[in-house]
Image (cartoon, rainbow, N blue to C red; front, top):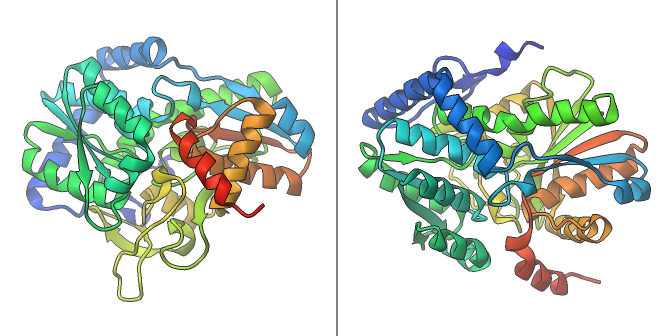
Length: 399
């Protein structure tokens, strides 16, 4: 399998997914962004500045950790790529620093972003602060209550938090409102998209900045285990952490890749956010994807216990990787994720984000089903933000 087959074409399509379905004025602006991005990644000074920030500011490389206790308990060798140890607590800082540097290079004065769990919001606010940029973060009113620690962090960092009161008051509506605001300010602002979604060129831009995860993980695993992993697991909402991790292993045909979607409360429409599993082809937020929708094509509400996963679509490259069978996409319920949250905390002393807990839960099921395998999990974020919510939720679960 050649990597050039796994990159977007000139129109931004991965197979039949992706593209740019925007008004002409915004399409022209996105073309300018793509041109600036291509020039930047071929500019030694840009790459040096980004690498400096990733190493000395964000704390890269994040380590790969062998989970001895879980491995003994479940019968497989389980490893974690510790993106939770990055500055701001998740993988989001990787692309946020890249986007902020690109915005500054283009002469923009403000970053506009959406956020669900708040990790992208915190990372964007952090990048804006260090770059001297203004920052507007759009967040659903439900998520603002649920993820209060991250909201407070964004405010301390100087970001303006815009509460979104429409619809389900969660991530989809936050994206809607952020796009509307950006369409009025694009000459002076950059839309810092928070995942590997959106119109071309953003899926490509985000993957480029997140590919550091897979590049590091592959080399680190080879150094520790003296072989490649049998399985690589990552949670998938929009899909930035997963696409970054998978990018390091796509050409290794012996490595099986697993993307884990949120099944939420169940298979019923509105009870989950598993767009690859239950979605149909459709256009959302300026790109073609697999979208949760009814038979008339109306976009349906997405739900997950993890705010960062409750989006009714997914990055176009994930759709393509699913279509060609390179990645297997499966699901984990809310309760399974909560149980994995506690399992990792109590067995290894690592409190994971609820988003990452979906990947942990799947890895543990995989270990039981296929013992003696080497399993590498992308631990995309830490769970400080989720502690109060999880403790309340745990009390409502059936004993």
